[in-house]
Image (cartoon, rainbow, N blue to C red):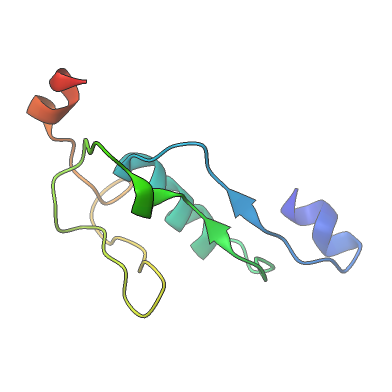
Length: 85
């Protein structure tokens, strides 16, 4: 999709369908690798009610989320929280 938008000189916006941190981590990595993401990358994460990743890797800084630097998506799964879902 980003390539098609680039071909036609259009910006790109993305939205997710999940409220879990693992989705946010994936969206942040994708956004960081998409140069023509000129509009919001809306993860819906602020409205989450459950979480399956351990705290610390994802946080909003000045209205955006820095790309996690750890291995893989940069987050660790909280097995107990995942089991509770």
